[in-house]
Amino acid sequence: MNFKKYHMSVIIPVYNGENFLAEAVESVHRQKHIPLEIIIVDDGSTDSTAKIVAGLQGNVRYVYQANSGPAAARNKGLRLASGDVIGFLDVDDVWSKDKLRLQLGYFEKDPSLEIVLGLLQRMQLTGAEGGKHTFKEWEGPVMNMHLGSALFRRSVFEKVGLLDESLGYCEDWDWFMRAKERQVPMVVHKEVVYYYRRHNHNITNDTETGLNFALKMLRYSLDRRRQQGKGQIEQLPRISDFATDHPGHPHKNKEKC
Image 1 (cartoon, helix red, strand yellow):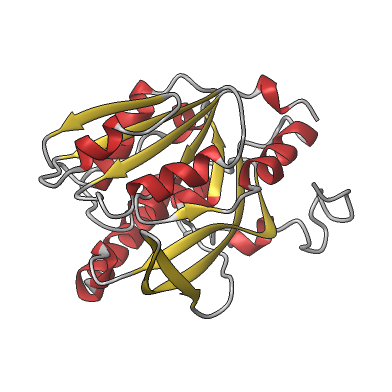
Image 2: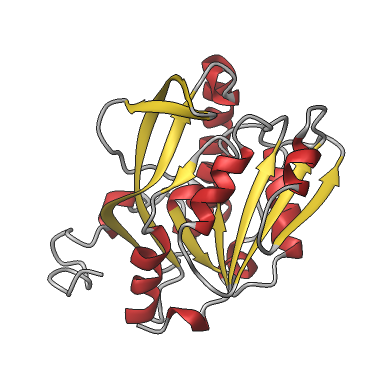
């Protein structure tokens, strides 16, 4: 398959990510994909993030902004991106070594697809060896509306819009809900492409705040569907309904990438 025709833009929002940034970027370089640009949006860091970026190799673009939250940082990256395919990576996480090969393969086989979503594997910090952090698997792989687990055609953001900067959490879920409401063509595959690494400083450790934003995100979706004037609110398809192995899915029984 000719993957070189896909110009990749990878957006990495960073807030005080000096301990993990180099590992995140390395996981992108391991894809060995060209053409590739990495856009690091520093969301007001006060640590040595800028110094770490200065030592990175490859086509890395760095931009600093006053602290505005992860949604604003990702939107900044989207506005700067030149690629026709967009990927996201949080600074403390890593991609699987074959993420781009797997997911670009679905775009190559089906030009109608606008989102390809893979599985997420949670990891728990166990320590550090040789200057790198060590993690162990925590529970099994999950299907999750996580931006980093997916690849997106750039054009889909023109249809769905950018991330909602009013949401401090769940802005990725909100975006996927809007995509489902617009019936954006999407497929879910069963391979793990993203390692979500848990540690003491994850912003999602604040579960109460996260729950409040999740409820807010769901209310937004219900309100949008009510405003469509359909009376009874239609149930949205589940993410699992887009899976390649779901009965009746157009990708079922096709050759795996």
